[in-house]
Amino acid sequence: MQPITYNQKVKTFPKKQKSLSAFTLIELLIVISILGVLAVVLLILIKPGEKLAQSRDIGRISSVAQLGRAISRYFVMHEQTYPNPLTWNNDLMQTGEIKNFPSGIEYRLNSVTPCITNAEPEINPTFCYALDVVNDNGALIFSKLEATIEVEKCPIGDTYIVYSTADGRTGTICSDGDPTPWEPGTKNYLD
Image 1 (spheres, helix red, strand yellow):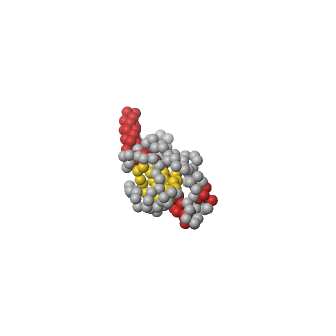
Image 2: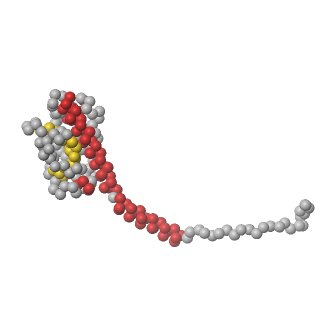
Image 3: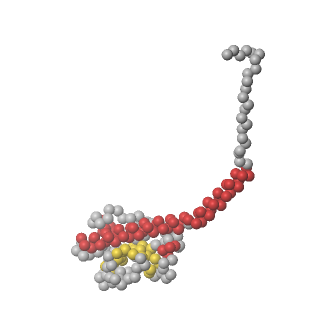
C-alpha cells in the first residue's frame, strides 16, 4: 500500500441523506386537541366527585360497624348497660373499647347534612348514637350516606348506615329523620 500524498485524491463515500420526518405545527395541534377532548370525556365518565363520595361512604360504613361492635362489647363488659348518650365517645375510649374515636368525614355531595342525635366528633360531626331506655330496644350507631348510588335507594327520607344492637348487625336503612332504636327483627334493611 502506498502512502497518500498531498496531491492524490482521497476517495469519499457518498453521504446518507437525512430523512425529514418531523411533525408540522398543525399536526401537533390536532393531536393535542384530540387528547384534550378525550380527557374531558373520560373525566365526565368517571365522575370524580361521585367516586370521592363513595370512598367517604366506605369510611362511614367501616366506622359505624367498628363503633357498633364497641358499643356491644361495652354492654357486655359493663353489667348490661350502654354508654351515656352525652358522653358515649369518651366512655368508649376510657374503657378501652376503642383506642381513638374516628375522625369526622365531611359531606360534600347531594346536599346531605350530618345526623344530629348525640353527634360526634365535634369537628365534622358524622357519627350519631341513640339509646332506647324506655322500651329496652338497645342502641343505634348511625351516619348518613352521601353518594348518589346510596341516596337514590331512598325515595323518601335519607339513607343511613346503622348498627343496631337489637339486631346485632350493620345495614342500610331509609329514614325520615334520625332513626331511633327498634324492636329486634322489625326493621327492613336495604342490604
